[in-house]
Amino acid sequence: MNGNELNRPRVLFAILDWGMGHATRSAPLIAHALDQNWVVHVASKGTALAFLRTEFEGTNVIFHTKPGPEIKYARRGNLIKIALQIPAFLSSIRSEKQWTVAQVAQHNLSHIVSDNCYGVAHPTVPSALISHQLQLPVPHALRWIAKAFVIQQAQRFKAVWVPDTSDFALSGSLASANPLQHQASIGVLSRLSLTEETGPWNRVGMVSGPEPHRSLMEAALRQWIMADSSPGLLIAGRPSGQREQEGNLTVWPNPSRAELSSALHGATTVVCRSGYSSLLDLAALGKSAILVPTPGQPEQLQLARHWKKRWGMATMSQSELERGSLPATTGEIFAHEPNVLACSVLQGFVTD
Image (cartoon, rainbow, N blue to C red):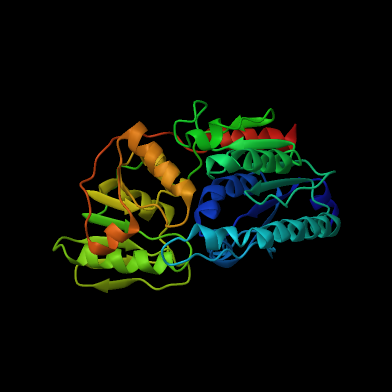
């Protein structure tokens, strides 16, 4: 490491790799760090790391593959299957801790920003946790255990940042039910922004989530779009894929932020997961959508219910989507300016 790098903040961004949502919402913070000429390290794996490599191609980002849990989902979302993987999840946190100690020693890191990676924190390096899920959505009898687990993990971080408004309008009880003394709301995090440009597509389907649900959703959305004669767009969520055109169907594996913003802005009907990062994108654009929770993810089911109650959004199950039984688009949400507060908080965390 040369002397110039030693005089600059050396920040590690650790990103959870369950799909691409954590990667897309952390991208504006990584971009801000690059704009400040900090030494930027980014760690993830799988599709999240592939997306980030594409998003920041040609920059000075130093990429790492980090350990992390390999959660597997049943076709119809069996919670028992997920529960049986808890020991492996806890083991992965221990692996993250060991990995983090090695990275701090090797790269002389000055700060850590961890998007839902509980094990990526260090006792002598200021570490911040990004999470909207301070109360895990578990059965009532287990809530005290889940609450104690989150508090225990969060105590290892100097700060906890909740990507939401101060009244938790977007995350609801997931963030408000278990407040922490060192948490702060940082507003909407999204790589999208409101634009006057509008795409030509009537129906837009956004594919996301872990397998096998990602592929099941993609197949169902293809059928839904092609059942209509008007132009439709499928966002496939595959960073290494190729663009396709089949009749009225356009497939983009990984559109740019400008392309995605204009496509969603101009669409008559949008279908997407109720994963929190997808909801943050909708909030940034002020866009309604039909929400489809990933089977076996109670967080997404809870968020879909919250957005239906708070913003009037239509929701449906994946089984209904596969049968083609889509409801009409309902609800309305105003556009929330993204990233301004979050980047300000990051700036203060690193430079103060």
